[in-house]
Image 1 (tube, rainbow, N blue to C red):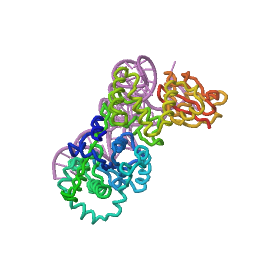
Image 2: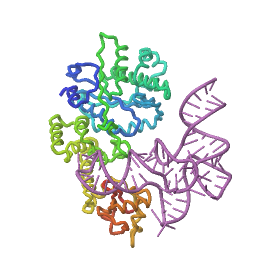
Image 3: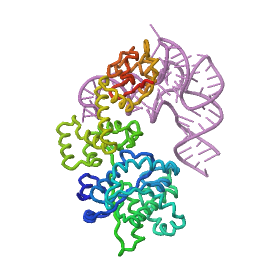
Image 4: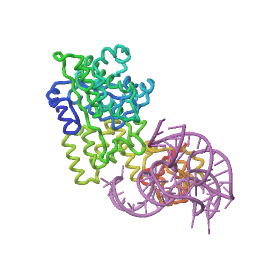
Length: 428
RNA sequence: GGCGGUGUACCCAAGUGGACAACGGGGCCUGACUGUAAAUCAGGUGGCAAAGCCUUCGUAGGUUCGAAUCCUACCGCCGCCA
């Protein structure tokens, strides 16, 4: 399938530098997307560009991932209202390391040369450059008049509260240079990115156009994808407990699965198109199913399953589904010890000395504030009075004590508040 | 530098000597309903050994039997004038 058609039916084509890119993409091309190493894990929101690169690859093209080791030191002003704090090189390096796993999982780095993915760090070509060289060879091609027209810059210039430093102002020069470098060294003629990257992409194309005179030039192109917003206007990938990451040590596969499962009906189909590789007829089928019986949440389940499988593998997916089954049925007594062990680490957990459970045990009203489930004894009593607390799936009386016989499989006790908040006590 | 305003709980915001752990709204939590949803309704939302006690109204002092409320100084924010 043609890449452009693919983006189009998925509503992922926001802007492109040319109307007939479709024809241009009949042949295998090289495209890149840049990633800022501002965190040691991508969030669910920024896997969209990675998935876009994967689609690109599946359409028979070659993807290049550019880690912004150098540009990350500067900070992209696009879409930012305030000057960013600079990260130190060590942090950047370890952040790149942290994000690498996601790229390796989603892209094929071992296939035939023509479509094999490549991962580069722009630090590699920026470290060799001297400031004077850059001013002379690159800076010459940039008109400050044009630069200050860019949205990313003008927004900051017009705000009297928050200006922009020369450093961030120069960001687009660096990103433009990336494109030029890749164009020269890797035959890369396309840059993709989120819609907020349009200005930077165009800067790169302009630079290429100036460096390479018209007759001998292969025209460079840019494609952007829309900003992913939820139907309520909030940003995709933000939960109450913070951002949803793809690295399992920051957001467990279970938590990710849950997050996606709770996608609003209004967003489910759209996100299926955005984030999964399901084909058009499969998506349509799910859409129809959702209209018939929304309570079954087929679309949400497909979204959650697909993404967890994609990012963490089928084993992790199975575990997440099994954990959810136990947790939401409340039926945790029937679990075997292996599944219980899995589940304990999926929810907030603390250790407890078994000695405290012997004899009379310890009253829940007193103990709950030691867990994540209550802030104070007053609150604990309130929850108990509301029958909101259950131990191993059974509603607890207000004067209930935790005792030795509550321990499941010699390893843990599972306490639940309300429907969804769990806390596991591990016996130590 | 001068003049004026303002600072209350997670956020907005009432309160201007005692009945104030502090009206109201938002948020958040719990319950009912439900699809592990949305919407809606009900309750809760400083702490504790709880008919009581302790800590909290920018900070530090002071007046008073008694202060979020009055006084002094300091700090922060917002205007207007230089």
